[in-house]
Length: 516
Image (tube, rainbow, N blue to C red; front, side, top):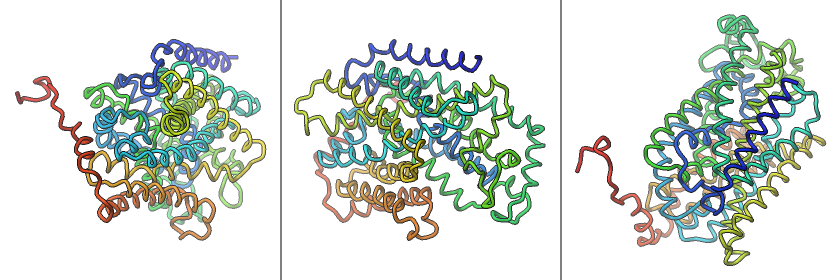
């Protein structure tokens, strides 16, 4: 009853905020970007909660903690420094300035106007549509075991409940409702992960006792080095490096992450948001991977198979670690993972529906679409996308279709590999060409599709979709400048007009500058 009561209150607050924010979602700019007037706390928490979902808390934390031990914490540190701090410093201000100057609300629209190319815009929107849907469906996966452990109810009920509630507050309030709910969900995540880490470590006698126990664990199939799972770099530093790169640098190329910078209010908000977002990532991401690093201490209740993997797979590790907690703490865990998943889900469906409406349907198939019709179409597509993602999750749950699971695994790598380099170079380098964007889009997405279908034929280091995704991102950073040098230069008038936004003179206070 305590767990159910907490859940009901939580859901009621989310829906109430969605209904309250209806006044901010009457036009496209308000519905998709919150009127470009979102403050630092809301933007930072929206960025962080979109970044870290149940995939990280249940899937990645359990899997990488089991494989790399305590060194998996490097993934969380990388998420904070590279995925948050550097992302805000390198992309934040320039993204906000240029996207407003180009009047673009989505990543494909940015590419279309930056290079004056409708075809490039449509190509980008197709890639986003293909890969965001399975990524959206994956958000439900981490909840199945937790809900079964906490409430002993069918996972299908959890999927439908989460889909319906997310749809209600996103459709009603748009980006502003999502941002406010993300703030609440972010606080839950900060408090939750801190309390859960303390409770789990105390169940093993405290931090030093847990660390000592982890150092005594041996697995000859992984490494013969004593204490390897409690070491600084763990048993496999190279593959751990690829994990850090994909989960950290990859955020720079994800449409739903970059879009947060479009909506931020002003310069002061960027400065504060950078600090807030980085600290949030240190606690949440660092805490998740740190917790997962102690997973092997629970081998006695995980029923580890002959291949050294828990019988229920890596997704069973975190739920097993939490199964002995008190009912109130279990309720906190469920709400924490629900918060992480719903915040990311809302961000993804806004990105998907706005992209399909603004960049694909508008002008290409539906001429002269008014603001009111665009908002209505975005809302309708939110329902469609949430329904599709829920249906995929249900099909996978009922029939265990491995193809869907593989497609989910390559989504992050494909999106980041396709968009990271073209987007960053487009913000900074005037000589970036349209052709280089096409090549990067194609290389990143095609590499991950080939990895999914022909993985056995890939070199050993690229058999993992994580490694292939990281390599796709690095390749894009090389491909864009090389192709730009050998292809036709962009129109100088268009480029100068685009980059003129950075040269615009604005008054500042004396505390910001002594000049003038």
